[in-house]
Image (cartoon, rainbow, N blue to C red):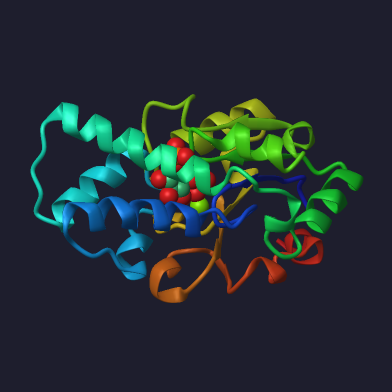
Length: 216
Ligand code: B16
Ligand code: MG
C-alpha cells in the first residue's frame, strides 16, 4: 500500500459463515407465517438490520402485523438464530480469514469491524477474535443501518483514518453502497449480479489475501 490504509471488515458473510444461519432463522419465520423464502430473497437481507429485515419479509409475504406481533417475531428470529450459532467456533471462520488477520496484525495494518449485527461481539468472542480488532462497531452503536454509511464512518473515526484510506470488505449490496457513498474502497465478496458496484470483486474469501490487499 502506498499510503497506509486501514481495513474495515463486515462480519456475517466475510469473517464468518453466519449468513446461512440468518437465512434459516428468517425462513422459519416466513414458513410459520405461511409463505416461502428463497435464498435469492435472502440476498436483500444481507447487511440489513433485524428490524428492516422483518419489514422486508412481511412485505414479501403480504402480511400486516401489529407492533406487538412484530416484536414477538423479532425475538423469535433472534432466539432461533442464537440457538443455531450456540456452538460456533473457529471452524466456521471463512477460508483464509484467520491467516489474513494474523498477517495484517504482523504488518501493523489496523483493522476494524463494521457490522449491522447486534450479536457481533458475542460472535467475535466465540471465535476468540475480539481482542484482535483495533475497533469494533456493531448494530448496537449506530442509529442508521446500511446502506447508510454510519457504521463505517464510526469505524474509520475510531481507527483515526480518513474514509478514502479505508478499505471495506463486504458481502452485501447494502454494505458496498454504504462504503462507496463515502469514498471508501469497496471490496465485494460474492457474485457480480449482486455486488456489481464494488470497486473490487472477489468470488470468495479465499481470494482475499494479504497480497491482494497490499496491492490496493
Ligand atoms: P442481528 P453484517 C448483518 O450483519 C447481517 O448480514 C444481516 O443478515 C442481519 O440481519 C444483520 O446483521 C443484523 O443482525 O440480527 O444479529 O442484529 O453482515 O453487517 O455483519
Ligand atoms: Mg455481511
